[in-house]
Image (cartoon, rainbow, N blue to C red; front, side, top):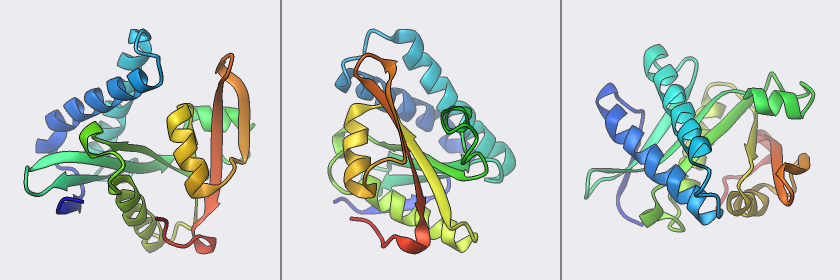
Length: 185
């Protein structure tokens, strides 16, 4: 793993983060065989940019991001954030976990995937949540490749919505307690 710095985003990071979101989301859709869904790709990019704006505008009160930088190349290589559970999570759980914080935007640059960057970001985020007195979180995914990772790290999802997006395209939601969970690897 390269030498990595984990820190909060700054206003001057906004353009690089916008480009980072675009690159990672397009790559994810490609890996999922969904590259033809151009409107969905653009909506997802805009959605993440709005989360980032919310973080920067409120100094992390409404959304709270952490970014990973490759110190050698001064390149943003990963992100993670937390904030209120999304409308999707609230709707899919019939409001059962609407008060829980959601951990999301766990993105790693395609050239750095599989090298522990995402796990490092998650562990730092979990310590951040505990430091803020937050002991539970939820996380969701509609991407099959990401679902495999989350199932390996967090076990079976609490909510498994079969064929939610289309035939064979499920959506999964996990809820976890940090006090019962060791640091993940």
